[in-house]
Image (cartoon, rainbow, N blue to C red; front, side, top):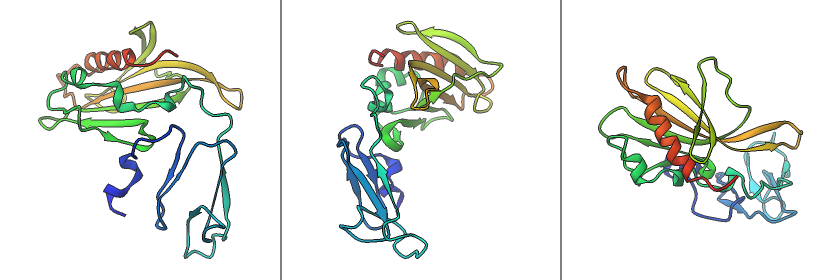
Length: 213
């Protein structure tokens, strides 16, 4: 499959919660309809919705099912947002050589990346969840509308900095508490750069673009 056909390059705008798959047998888009279950295996329609392992006898003709997530993500969840929309051209002007109109959008549109065409700078923005980072070098600050943020210098190597902005608290199906966060990473700042200043500035712009939690 050519890279341009990969779902890692993103999908066309559609209803939030839609399931996308692209096996060799053809595309599948399953809408977020209550009670909908996607059946997969090496069989053919109408026995299965998603054909996988069609030449592999170890895969059953009706191998399994993908039930709809229940309950769905709450309306305030980051899962309903496109990560790349949180940074506009004005915000990204602060990074030399980056064109805000050309993000590399990842799966679910929950992460994106911009690379400079004039130097080694790279900006990654992605959604994360779970426990807050507890690195010994981490420091806490506030951004935007009193949003908690964690700054992690050199988190992804020299010349990098990661800033995680807390969007909301949640309790999972297993009753474990966590947070949804926007993670902003700057790479390639160089030995004399100030990546955490730039990352914090960009994270502040992303935080300002977030809806109420």
